[in-house]
Length: 95
Image (cartoon, rainbow, N blue to C red; front, side, top):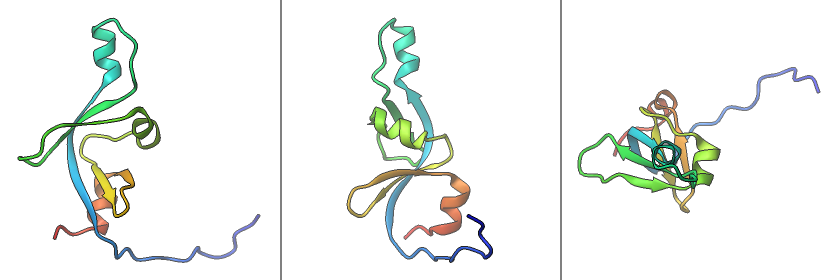
């Protein structure tokens, strides 16, 4: 298939919930220290004060591979994702 023209462009107009990520502590790191199998989960620590660290499961980690400095994003309907900081900050403004 040869693409001969630019793909259609879209502008985002949806609202999401998001937290900037300060730290990602993978269970595999703790499992190694504790000499046990990992469950593949991780604890994400938000950058903003007032939000407690929270666990994300193996499926989230495998699919999204969140990184420090990026954003944990929850869409209407409950879908959870990750967005690199540059892309998120270019597309969203805090309400």
